Picture 1 (cartoon, rainbow, N blue to C red):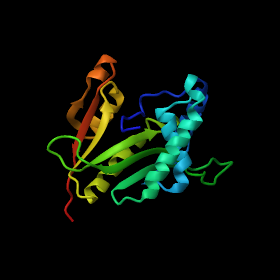
Picture 2 (tube, helix red, strand yellow):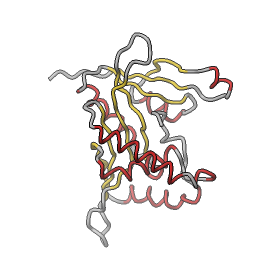
Picture 3 (cartoon, rainbow, N blue to C red):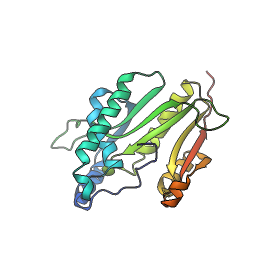
Picture 4 (cartoon, rainbow, N blue to C red):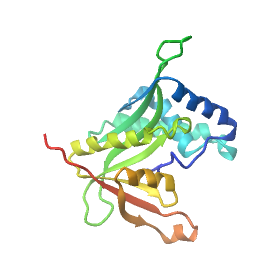
Length: 218
């Protein structure tokens, strides 16, 4: 997986339409709060579920491979978390909901989104290492609640703390909803990446976007 943002690409399966409606109703009917925090090993299963649902939805022929894909995602993420790099962070968006009158206790927090930020080596001329956002995803049933925007925003102070003045990510050129989100969040086109092979297959090009970060003096 890379950073090609999937939140607005994939609709939940039709059979899950009722579940989606229930989730949306739950968000609006109860007092809710979204907290963005660093992910930990205890989040691995939930994070893998969010990523698998976003990038590899369990529909059609993909249903049989879904458990394998999810396991692979989980183990890859486990490796990155356990590596403990000083310039890597995975954020989790956690939803907390207050119960109803019949169940007034605070419900178990639920991981609804994730994003990763890391430092990568130069891949384009005239640059050095750079801060790069990848694997931004929100659970299909909790979208259009501003979660993705909050995840993006939390990457910026981390990148500044590492000494970077810019932050980068990729998006597919046909992902209009993602591009709209990124544009409204301050990202601008840095360069278009294409290949003859991709053009021959009529695949959408990848766009490398960049955002200049406001440096806050202490």
